[in-house]
Length: 111
Image 1 (cartoon, rainbow, N blue to C red):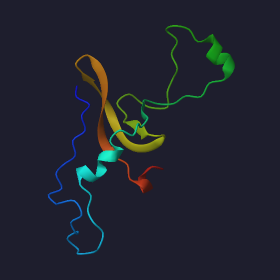
Image 2 (image 1 turned 90 degrees about the vertical axis):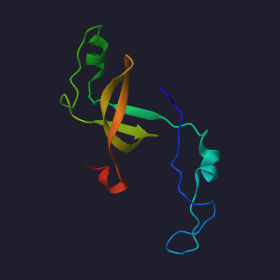
Image 3 (image 1 turned 45 degrees about the vertical axis):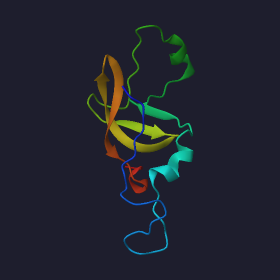
């Protein structure tokens, strides 16, 4: 599984004007190169549960904790603790992965 990030060709030269003709320049992949090495924290959350300390201390191998999600329900994908997408768990070469099925816009995060 490759971890390379490839951005689409925007079809414009760096610094070209947008179609609307305003002064704001479009950005190309070359313009974004300085941020490619910035680390981000990604979490795929299957579900959540709240337990008290006494219950936590009684857990052992094989214990089951009920989550707030149903089987087959979409999981939440967070980037730097911000909900950005929902997706599904997939199997890739005997490893678990996540595929995004929905991108969350700013106003949709509370849904």
